[in-house]
Amino acid sequence: MHARSSLSEAQREAAVALFEKGVGYGSAARSLDAARVPVRALYGRWRIHGQGVLVSRLAKSYSFEFKLALVERFLAGESGPALAVEAGLASRELLQKWVRAYRLEGEDGLRPKPKGRPRKPDSPPPAELPELERLRRENERLRAEVAYLGKLRALREQGRR
Image (tube, rainbow, N blue to C red):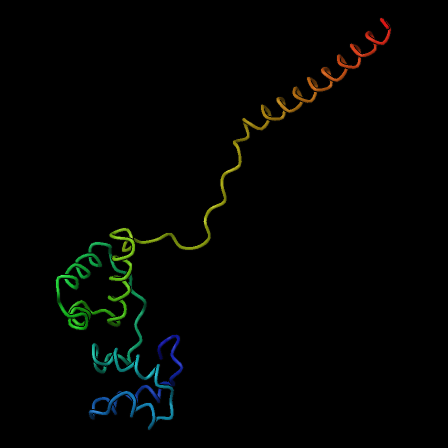
């Protein structure tokens, strides 16, 4: 069964049998008492893979060059479903997703993106920590010295009056 499909294995097999008899996805959904959207998605995959749609496959990743070549062929005017069948893609929606990314971001939209949470910025190296602490202490000492000298000057001026 497809990982996120709401159709059971029996419903999927029955739907494929109906598709092979020439029944459309809407009629198949009604006769199976199933939602139209998953049956339509199954129908689209069935048009590409035939009976192979019932075999579950592992997710496949495609290289940047492969994606770029298919997108360029699509933009040159070749049919999306025909390209999906020729390339063995899971569905034509995958090709459409690549074309959308290419149009929005250019070639960078087809490059692999880093997965997961971004790395935390590195903390300062341990060698710099003592230096930073030393500078903080020196800064504190100098502030105290300035405050002391300011009070001393104020006392001297009071004595002169």
